[in-house]
Image (cartoon, each protein chain N blue to C red):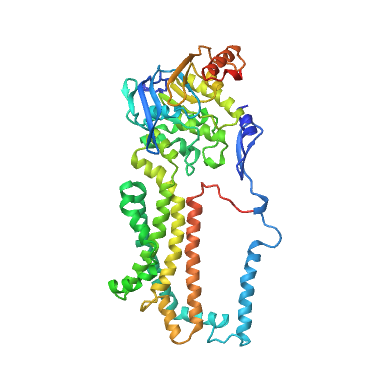
Length: 266
Length: 292
């Protein structure tokens, strides 16, 4: 008798990512009772699988846009769509990596990464993914360490693994490398690119580092001073892997700095 | 290669060092600071010598008659008195009665304090309703309520337990409330983006975040529980350590009073020790300053 062998292959085929549509979004805060306009009629389309960076002067409202995309706040006016559906609140398919690792100090590295699946109630099925995500960010062997035992770069890798384990369709990066030392930052920039290329999710990155935006993204959106408006966008069609010394990157950098009114520093 | 980059650039946290093994893998090695290691005479011996000298002085003053028994009985008398009280079973019975009062009061007061703190910590409506009242009431010294408690509950067990419950509710309330309100908002937001529900946020983020403060509150509550116990047991007690003491006062048995004082102290130390162990196990994730 021949036993029929049924094999279920793990289907972790790269997904194409989500498309984002920001439609006429304005947002304001209340500061001492006075309304403070942060975003003004922002329109933005991000295609599925695209890597887009948002660049702008400090405090211009870039991070606010990310918070709206993440669903942490509703916009004052306008609408945001993900794959044609209105964004109504946070969802693990649109997970955020913040500037600070925001790890839970009472959870080990493993349990920090596992929190997403635990919240979804499918931790048992996703145990393998947790290990995989930790391996992806190079932290195998640190499962039982507590956040206070990690360096800044390692903690940020844990935060990245914690996001990746949810199989995000849109990865929202809010200056995730902003507080790292420059060597770690360079290493992690290259890792981000290869993660994005392998997993195929959409990336929306906020940064104030012109070089980082150009090195990573296919398209760089430049915001004006507050209230943030879309100023220009620069399409960077250079193929990956890119090289920091590429003279074409330097040219683009010059152009972006000019847009930010900083070309006197060139 | 990447590992080497991190090693070169990362700040080294105290007590833990990232080391690069021969096979190019990172490892965590915990290194105890030199100050934590013993030097010369063992620490325990050094610390014990002070109290022992004091005990010796007390004994010398007693046997030479400089300190009469009617003022303060000497250590030898106290020891024999302890043996007598233990042999008759009086001391054990008194300890159990007092311990029962303290723990029952703490359980009632602590539960109320934690419950109210959770309500006003988690919900703004709860805060508006509960917090102002609690902040107002906590300024009243609970000992001052004894006359009222006697009128309400008589002179049995009830006013004693009520006094302890009242006294212990506030430290736990204040600390748990502060703990909940001090939870880092970015941790809550990160939890929301990871898909945690409201209940999940409370369970996985808010309550663990409030735990260190809650344990501080527990220690305070225990301290005031003993204080309230001592006062409460002055209310017409017919059992317990306080009863033993007031009886001894009637007969000028200073040795029994000393025994009772020591028992109060030992109970306090024991319970404090339990909380310390609790802290060490529940808060093992915290980087603690170990002293220099």
